[in-house]
Length: 258
Image (cartoon, rainbow, N blue to C red; front, top):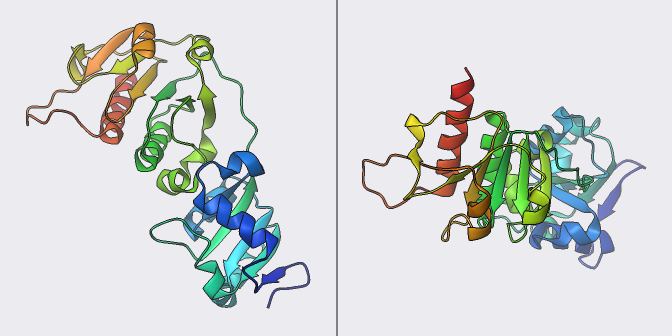
């Protein structure tokens, strides 16, 4: 049972439960609802560590009975859900047993001078989340998602980002015209042209442009790039996964500053 400030859901027709299912299973529902769904205790703790508290803290009923005492300071309204119903909320391969509902952060203005990562049409949620983690780790505090890129605040990207979202300035649906306001050099990744990364003198600050998994950087952004860089691959693979390439490129920029 929850306390007097909480709610227990035992009907699959409950309006909040329906909203949670949409948030968890529709990658763009957060834009319509103006709130996001964090699933799993790791992500929820990452939010709390950043001083971010939920409007609703949602728990599988049996999980709340076991560990609810650990979450009394989380804030927000406590909602417990019958175990059989909670299992139907998640759209993830490995569902969590709890989640937070948070207000969708307000869209920030583009910082023209910020070290940035530009996502140019990436589609895979795992790749996008991995790149957000690398951006945070290597000092690229602004991530700019061009129109057509996977939704940054979708549950799958949030899960892959492992909490990195909360330390980054995230912009979505950016057009090439808006990107032109960026005043740092654009460095485009390529598998077949440009200077080798390990031989290049990298500018700082800069913005790394990472292209679609299959098509690479678009012609439009390629035309705005200051330089193309490629990663030496003596093993002979045609190309690297974009998440792996991003980590190598962002690390090279960070290492060049030391």
